[in-house]
Length: 250
Image (tube, rainbow, N blue to C red; front, top):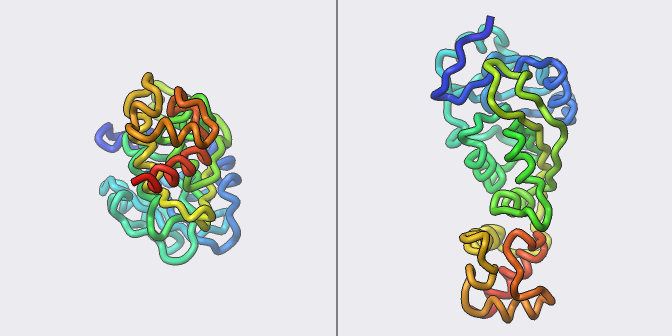
């Protein structure tokens, strides 16, 4: 019997075994490697990760679930009671796998993409609309897609219907895979790129040059771009070049 889901933790239990196996397959787990799971909940995904050979460190915010998880897994899983937004990730290489509460999706992405000790891969079950925004291309870009694609190669793996959860949410979900880049080849400050992107997206209906300010028109023209271009139409490489060129004018 499933525990009662708590709205305060945005809990929706994943009950679809097929979806669980697809998540584990997407993680590409090698026997003995470390997996950091956020929000193990009832332990359904945790069990599949263990069976795949992972050394699982699971952080759970709901204190009522800690003892049941420890009883279920014993020494096979390190269960940590804490907040994933402040908990220190495992030492060494690790992959992050999680059914993320919708309410903290952006915060989780920001923390672990930019963390000084990031995962090598993130497999996240998120709201489908958010997944679509993360993998969006030029014409539909947002600050979220810029941030994610700066730090990782992003792809949507598969859709998860609302009926795969209990209680059933009002929206469908999707699994995304983010393989984090191990080096910044362009040697551009990614945080600076994000800061420029935030200014560029401050008013989506306005031209990019008007959102960012003086000098932007000339920089865009120098890049061979239409000075009337809007933020959502730039590529990741465009954002890097724009940030670099703007910094030279300061």
